[in-house]
Structures are given as C-alpha cells and as structure tokens.
Length: 163
Image 1: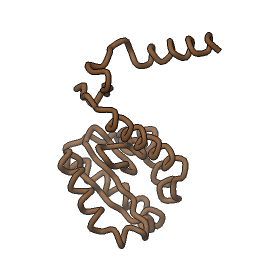
Image 2: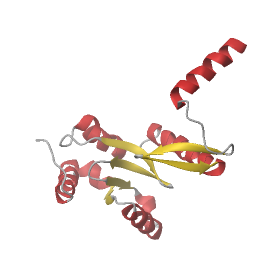
Image 3: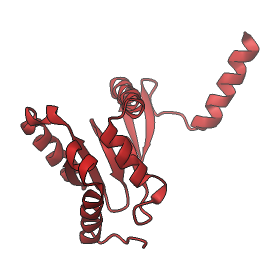
Image 4: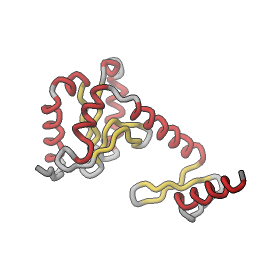
C-alpha cells in the first residue's frame, strides 16, 4: 500500500512539476502563457467543468458526432479543433484556438433558452472568440454548407485554410 502511494505521488509530482503554489490554500493553473492563481473553490469548479466536458464528449448527439468526424484530425483546412472545451464558465461544443473560433450546435431545447445563448455568445465574444451557431438539423441535412460557412468565417478572421 505504501509503495503504491509513493509511486502515485511521484508520478503526480512529475505531471504537475516541482513548482509550489504561492499560498497553501491556492493552486496554480496554466492559462495560455500566464500563470493564474485560483482559490480552492475556483479550482474545484474548474475540475467539475472538466468532468462535465468529458461526460458531454462521451454522450454526444448525432449532429455532434457528424460534425466531429468532419473537423477532427485537421480535416477542415488544416485547422485544429477540439470538442467540448471549457472556456471560462462555459463548455463549448467545438473550439479552434488559432482563429479563436467557437462552434455551437443547438438542438430544439435552445428555442426556449435564446436569452441564455445570447448572453453566453456575448461572454465568449468578450473573450475574443467568434461564435458560430448551427441547428442540429442543419448539420444533419447540410453538412457541406455548414463547413463552408465555418471556412468563410475563418477566412474573414484572417486564418489560413489548407486546401
């Protein structure tokens, strides 16, 4: 039991690094090129958001699966997309960091939550992201048109698309 603890403890130190947090009740997190200090509650909230993102990845809708098949492995113009990404206090469906683009797929439940979606889009735009929203039915019925719209937005933002 002790050997298992020591092995796990050493592995954790190798993953995290040897840098210590500045305060015993704080933890550090790497955000872009800056180190930000979070208190315990913020760190716990972040861990909860990451667990939620993992759950959403496992339980994707048919539209999300189809979109991910088209975006993964730099299939859309060489752009690297990630899915179910935590940005601030939101989990976004798809995110491309280079042109700072967020793609959200909305189902029928979003008809009642229009004001929430608008506020969420504004918050993400304040972070510097362009937000594109598509209905699930649009992705399922016209995937090529959706991908063309994404490509147009990338070109508008000055991103380069590989042919």
